[in-house]
Length: 146
Figure 1 (cartoon, one colour):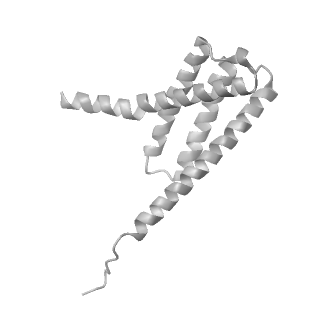
Figure 2: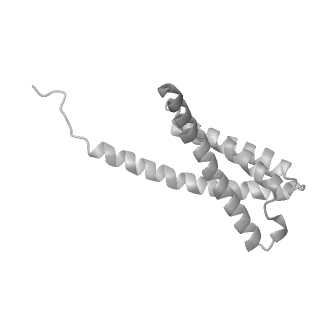
Figure 3: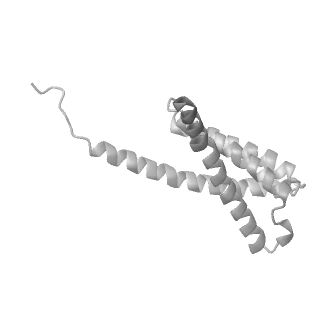
């Protein structure tokens, strides 16, 4: 019984919870942007919400790429970014059908990329600072001391 609980906890913490967070944030941002830009008719419908959930589930799966420690952080971020753009194009641009012209979809991808790299830069800077501070706090033990 204990093993089943661990599997369930792993699924919850590595997939379901992140997917719910991605879904909540994406629906909130999409709704806020549509009302700010005065496109109330683009408010999320059931179809759009299902597509956002599929996108969020894909993003939650992609997030697990950061658990692979054998890859350099640059490659993990690159794989995550490429996966996110592919998900975005397939699910939120093509399937919603809101951007039938390629220019609108391209501009959306550029805006998404700028936001992604801004957030990734902040996260990587915090990560580097935390890693550096944890290395400086370690006590130095000389290997050559007798």
